[in-house]
Image (tube, rainbow, N blue to C red; front, side):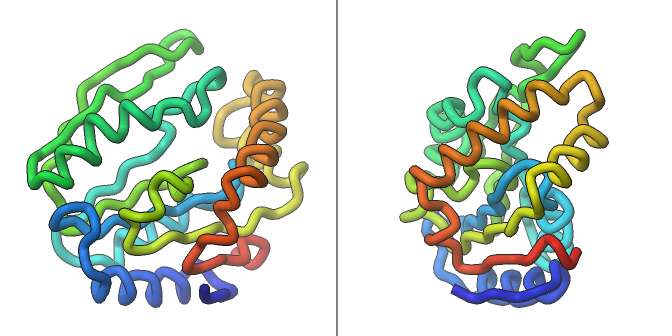
Length: 192
């Protein structure tokens, strides 16, 4: 496990590691960017993808999760994306959309076989993913109130109560899953 201070420096080192790693998902190298909401995972994932040449696919757990099912979407992701890619086939899934503030299965998203798959979001590096990951990155969270304000700025004031409930869930999830302890890299989001 490596610890670094800036998103840019970790993105560079993580990209090198991913390029050098053997594929574990069929012919695909899979990286996961995980950590609590509002920690900066999306920002880091975009920096990482920009440093990976070739066919790279970024998928966000927000395409799957709902307030009521923050991590229970995994079977849908595995069946639609992981299993086909492992077998050298294109995958796909129906993205969770929020018309009128309620989650529904929306547009189909095709997932051609990439050289590198990056999954970003809460629970992306869960224990069930570990054997298939080429690299797991944990974004160290800032304090819960600062993360809450970042998330409210992103999702809107109407989401504040749900985001508080989500933060409670995250604490329990990450403690049980031990995601942080398995990470290859930990990033200090306070400095980014």
